Length: 491
Image (cartoon, rainbow, N blue to C red; front, top):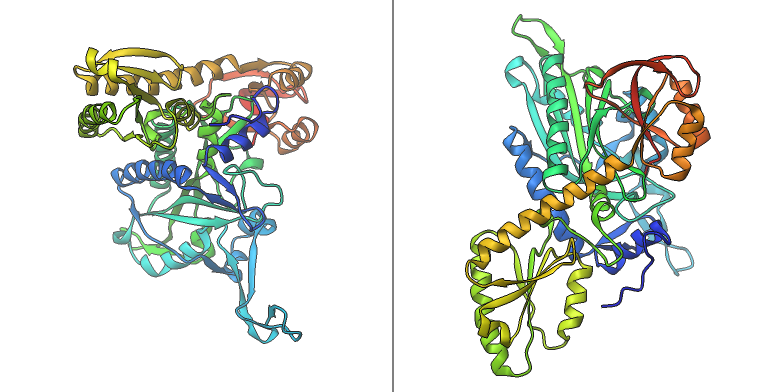
């Protein structure tokens, strides 16, 4: 399989785009700014979705579905929310087409204008809180712990596959609570769920914290986030959880009768991750040979490739291969046997290496005689010969080892790429030479944060949760600061 694509050192951005396309994850569509997620890419997303869905349900959440279209008037009810999303909204104004007068095409029927224009869902707080008004009457109706898997549209002019597209897939949780304490606990709980998923399944170490006011979700009182570091030294926001206070409850008049028989406004959260995680997966682990996938999210965890010259040899190898497959499947390991005669073994080796399959088994006539199999692992490209006895257990342990190795490799990289900066010159030098996470003092004002962003393109990625209190001086203004925050250039 051809590997004619840029290396990370030559052009990291091009390397990423080439890899996503050539590994059959996704491609640009005929609709500007939108993507087609191809079967192999969607298979990874299904793994992401299945595991997260399981974790949501284990924490008491249930799934529902809400409309794609949101009345425009809903957005005007929460001022900061509409301000945050106004520039990204796609608006439906008419509901019918008709033939053009020249008969050569179609035009929008001017007589089919909607009475109220509809926003194509950029996020669902408004439509959901309008719905919750009908669901909530008393404290007995609370909490509501709902999630939906959906698509959203945020009109982007500059797009990149998975990382930023006009339409993308995601999940969005929207919960309603009787007390502020319960809502804050919910927002923090879901942050930890996201962090656990990122580290245990994606093998990506993440930092946990809260966003600065400038970076906070539009309409939130507090935004919690997890941040990951990509191989080019840029940060990627991998998930957010928002404590919304009573903002949306007040905007949509969602009240409940408390245990004390008082009418009170509901407390709210929302939280979500998207197909952006696919981009994080590619950029965290992959190399110049192609994709590297953590076993827990790989659509194919093991591939078996026969090496033979005669039909008799193939038949004998296939019999043993199917025994191995049955044993692996019994352990819940996804395995593929590639006995296609249209490609040579070397081509298949390259294909599965490029697509990031964690473990490759190759078996020929001599292996059958010796009771062995050649085992290649994608993360290190090492090859070893394993005895076939208890091969299922050996492969199971190898997959666990690969999963842990990918996490530790990413963690070591992040540690090497995390720096303290105590002066403006030091801060700019780190950004321009290595990038990475920079821990630095900030005076706490939005004005200083904005100036730093304008001059360096670096933003405050997060204020660490339970961060160490440490007196210092802001790197930009020299004013007093009580805690370091994490800066980085980001996607």
